Image 1 (tube, helix red, strand yellow):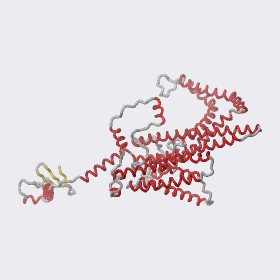
Image 2: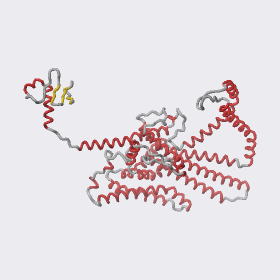
Image 3: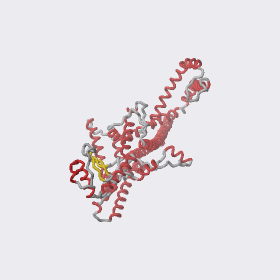
Image 4: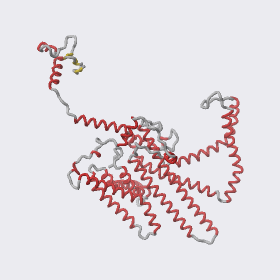
Length: 543
């Protein structure tokens, strides 16, 4: 029903269909099938549920991709209206007896789904209106007309693909100057005029955005609910009051951690789009330097690339959970520092450990200064490694072998913390591997993304599609061309071939015609300035 490798027709409509299916995807992720105690039954029931949801949303895609758009619109519009009415009527009936806060908590997460359903119905209505306006309310053209946009052989390129190829051929334009605000915004995401994201990529981003929106609203609702309960709790005991205050602070910390996690996830999603765009443009030019050498190109990439969307959504959700946990731990750590006893312990540690930290920092700075002054050979430039005082260097390296051991231990702790922070920040993004160089082939999500890049590049390359479009147009034009045939030319050709193969017939020919081959010429005849030879395999060559 969807051509992810084709022309990307109705990208926004397909993206909204996947957005409307986010509720089903959310249920697939978080529902617990507890009725079946058999593990095999649970596994096959989950697969059957996935197939069921796929069939429920199949009519949307089938009607959008229909060859006859009028039939697709006539069938898709009633189906979309029925699904919208039934789904949200059933959801509103469950809200009977709920309070206003609970009612709002149920309605707000479904707002993106409502907009997606409305967009789908509007799309079918617009298609129906255009078809009726162009072909009338009745007519046989509905069923027997040629829709050139639905024929892959006719339309292989879109306008931005042609513009991309034109930019490659033409001279590069001078760089454009941007304002200060636009300059910093383009550091986050720099749009390209002649590049469009694929339908599959936009659908994945749509699902991740709606899931993040729903989870953030759930966090806010739970935080408000807990704060209301704690504020309504009253007690005269000092210990209870202090406990309530601590719980209220912890809820606020959790809400702040959720807010920071959402912000970082949004930035990660935007940066993923920017990096994916740059990777696709580099792949279009044949630049694969960013791909690890351990990942080899093979036919299996077609199957591995199908896992891209599921890995991206799963990694994004786990990335949010990990970021929420990380920020919660950081905020709780700073909150603990506000306690008097902990402050005394920290001050006591700074009196001893702070001196060690200052000495380590001073030693590090001294090492840099010595390397830039004593060990440097000024007879060579900076990029050349040359030691000026060799004996001093050997003495210093011996003593530094013992002095640097404590610094190495503390540096290892810093390395672990940095690796945890970078891993948590990069987990929502599948375009970067959390594994080091040499081990990136063990990152299944990153491998799926690389395979997805190769498949998309193989079928969405603008130069390839424009070339195939030109070849298809020229082939169709040549087929339609009417060739003329000259009977006289055909007769002279057969005559020359006959004389070349039968030299003994020259005595029967009148003079002034085609000259028969002479004994030294072999299979060769002449007629005017045209010389015809018969090759080894009876082929005639015209020189």
